[in-house]
Each structure stands twice: as C-alpha cells, then as structure tokens.
Length: 517
View 1 (cartoon, one colour):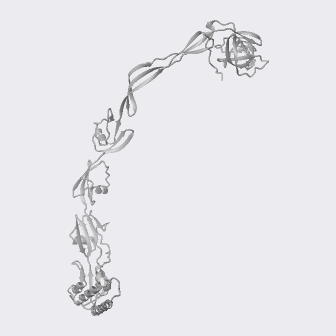
View 2 (cartoon, helix red, strand yellow):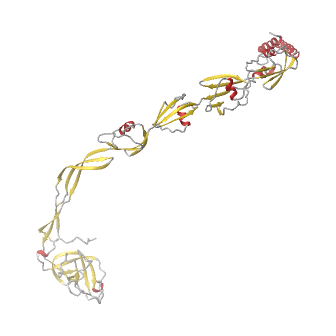
View 3 (tube, one colour):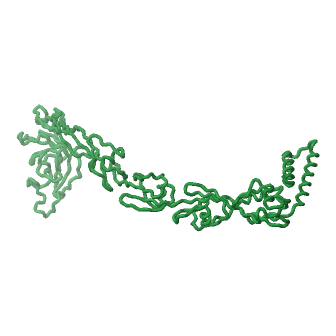
C-alpha cells in the first residue's frame, strides 16, 4: 500500500468513528485534535504531488498524484476500465508534472437478437459498425429498435446520457476524481433487432408470401391488413411465434342469417349443413319443427335459414243459432194487450277442430267433429184478439168505439202539403176527397182508409189521406186553408169508431213506432 492510499484509508477510518451529530464529551478535544492532525498531514501530502490533467469523455479534471505511471495513477483512483476503453497515453507511460491523460469510455449496449441478449461495450456510433463489430448481419426487411423507438438501419446511437453515481465523494473530488469518473460511463443503450421472417399464407384458394417482424401470427396478419372473423380458423394459432418458411392456413367461415323465434341473427359458421349450424348455435328443433332449407342441405354463402316452429292444437268453437219469435193469438186477452209466454234462447252448435300453426300463423284447420250442443227455444208472445165495444161521453155526445190507440198528433192543410195552388192535385187527398177539416192522414197499416175516428180536442173525422212522414202511430189532422193549422206535436188517444171490421181486416199487432217519450 502506498503512502497516498494509506493516508486516505486512515482519514476514512477516523471519519467512520465520528458520531452523526456533534456531542459534548470528555474525548471531544482529543478527537478534534487527532482529526485536525490527519487533515494537515493529508493536505501537506497532496500538495506535494505533481499536477496532472485527466480528461474523461471530454470532461477535464485537475488532480495531483505521487504515482509514476498512468496505470498506477488510475489504479490508485479505483477507476475500473475495460479493454474497449481508450486511454492515451498508454497505461505503461511515465507521468510528469503537467501531463494530460485522455480516457474515452466505451458505451454499454444491450443487443437483443435471434432469441439471445448480447451485453457489449463499444466505441462505435453507427449501427452498421456495431453490427460488423459483433459479427451480426441485417436483412433489409429486419426492423431495428433503439430504446423502444424504431430506427432505420443507417442510424447512429443517440447522444450519451449520464447518470450521477451514488459513489461520488465530494470531499475528495479536488484530488481524487473517482466519483466523477464513475459517473462518466453513459447509460446503457437497448438495441433490439426483430428479424424479418418469410412466411407463406394460404387463405382459402389464394396463396401468398410475405415477410414479417412481428412476434405472433396474429400481429403478422394484422400488419398485412388481413381481416379475421371470430369464426375463422387460423393454423397455427394466432399466439404462435412465426418461424422461417412457416406456412399459415386460414379456413374462412361462411356468413349466414338465422331467422328464429321472431329474431334475425347475422352470424358466420364453418359448418357444412343447416343442421350442423343449428347444433353449433344451440338451436333445437322440437316436435314437428322444421327449417327452410332442410337440415341436410349444404350451406352456401349468405344462406338464410328460417326455423319454423310448429304447434298443433285442438280448438272447440261454437256457433249460436238464433231463436224465432212467434206471435200467438189469444181470444181471452183484450185487444192491444201482449204477454210473453216463453222467453226465447239461441241454440248452440259446437265444432272440434285440429289447427296447425307455423311461427304463430294458422296454416290449416281440419274439423274432426260437430254436434248440436243446445237446441234453440222460440220466443212466444201472445196478443189479444178480444174486442169489447165501449162508449165514451164527449162534447159532441156519446160515441161508440172498439179500439183506442195512443198516437203522435200533428196538423196540416192543403197549403202546407207541398203542392202549389195551381197544381191540378192541389188539395186532393189519397182517397180523392178534398182536404180540409174532418179529413185526417194516417198510416193505413194502423188505421185503414175511410175509417171513422174520434180525436179529443178535434172531433170526429175520417181517415181519408196519407203522407210521406205519416208512419206508424202518427195522425195528421186536416184543416181548411182559411184557418191555418195549429202547431201541434203531442200525443193523443185516437178512438176507432164502430162498426167493427171483419176479423181478417183487423191488424191485431200494431207497429211500435214512433215511441212515446
């Protein structure tokens, strides 16, 4: 061990014994005295060394040393050098005061290539030189990445980046630049070479070759702009690493459309028949279900497969037979009285049919049985035919009548009948009589023409006219032109006077309109 090194170690040992903080104690004076003595000795020894200019990667450092050769000085500085580093003058050269020593440190480079990693030191800057130095060759389709950035083959290394070293000793930097030297080695450069691999692609009936630098088949196909569907099959698998002269096979899926249960499904398949497609998609045929086209038919491109759901049911239907209304004369029942003798009820015919539905739509119906479930029942109404002649006291004296009919009463005259005075039929009634007071218009189905009647508030009259609006139980009272008819619209009892007409001329059941409010 030389004197310079021994002094340095002695000071470091002394410094190592110092506490983290200054503390007052009995040995403090002795410790400080010893420390001062060592510093004095070290300073004196250093100042007696010869000055040397050390330049590392272009950075100058002024130092003093007692060593006689370049190698001895660098060893005393604990500077680790490699064969790739360049030192001028040579290590065995003698040192004199004022000499300059230049060190060009080699750059560390990590080269990842062909499945291995090479850690090298180099003075080269261009990629071509580095590849030549390490006996590596490049294909024009290979891809090169420096620190994860893709670069062309004729690129150079990026400018060096230096990382401060934790071992730098600032206290002795003026005389011992070991910290500066240690921090001068540039950061390692990451160099990755992805080899271009020639592969052959068989895409159905088409074959082609291409080079790829991607690490998986999936990435290589994506790089070529090849679209794959989830149902397509790639052999070898997409995660497989490409190898030289590899053959890749793509089995394409076929686009098909499924129409099932009210849904339209666009999908793809590699199955060969309709039935195999349904099995792949988990679509089951049950009972009499079937498909268009049939399940054994081969699949063609853009095939549309319709699944027809079949359901057969037994349905019972019923038709109602309307009942009939029958009128029964009753001699014991007074005229214009009616009684329901039996309430009518419709009959029921039932039919049992087998019905087939396809996708919810009825496609055929077959009657299996038909029967009369309930016979209709007639609605029986008895009407009175018993006529009783009665007498009514009026202002004009007693009258004898055989029928009383409530009727809607209005009034008219020749002038209001709708004909002009110069019309040849002006004032002529349906029976040929002259219109006027005592002539009334009726519906012959209710009161036959030429029948004598009595209307309270009007008097006796003869049914001698009809009218387009006179229907059913409606009577229109005639008035003379010299006395305008009153505005009438009311219900009055009209009495049909004797004699009683023959039975075959009597309408026993009168119309029920108009209805009295």
